[in-house]
Image (cartoon, rainbow, N blue to C red):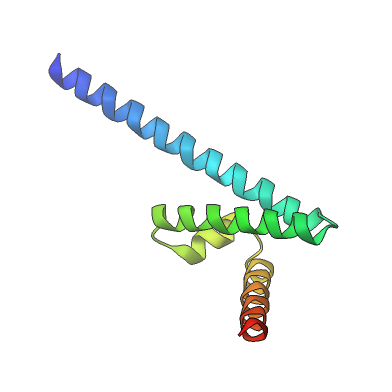
Length: 97
């Protein structure tokens, strides 16, 4: 009986983790699409911040980041966008100092 309860708990926990990962993936893709389709710079910035935040949470759960990016988006586009944001932020920092 105790063994059956342990197996049941592990099964429930595993299903919950899978569901959480799936929901995280859906959130990532939704925010990524909001970023790509938005015409407002403010909306784009907000959506990209959410996308990067979710991506960082995903990275903590995934051992292969390259595979993760490939699974979620087109790698070259995502890398370009994130790189461009870093360059823009560095320019803003230089102008501010």
